[in-house]
Amino acid sequence: MKHTLSFGIMHQLSDNIIELCLDHNSRFDHTCYDEYRSVIDKHIEKPYGVLVNQINFSDFEHSLIERVLENDSVSAIAAVSYSPDNDLVNQRFIRLLRNKPISLKAFCGYQLGRMKAQHWLALNLTTQNQSA
Image (cartoon, rainbow, N blue to C red; front, top):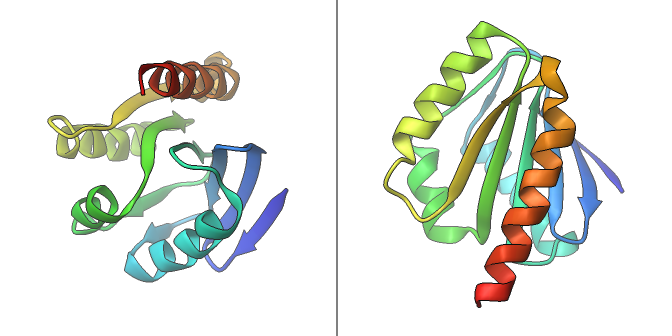
């Protein structure tokens, strides 16, 4: 299922995995998060994983991290990057989440990254569900 949002596109890859493709030069802020959450709440099983497909350059508001961790049932995020600029965004994101209870992994888009990221998310969610 595909959802067109004001800041990009969200594809439902499975019952509990979504792919988020942000528009070029977009900034994922609190307004974007609210729109994103409305789709998640209606269509995605929890806990869930997010594949952030960074085909375009995008960034995020740092203050959003705490809100996501407090109010969200996301348990894993896989970020697929195709540029050095997005690699820097991913590194900042990883540093901010370093000691948080969420799995995060970055993948290179030019080395079958999207496919590897989707596989990693599915494996991560399966392992978490078996542990619960």
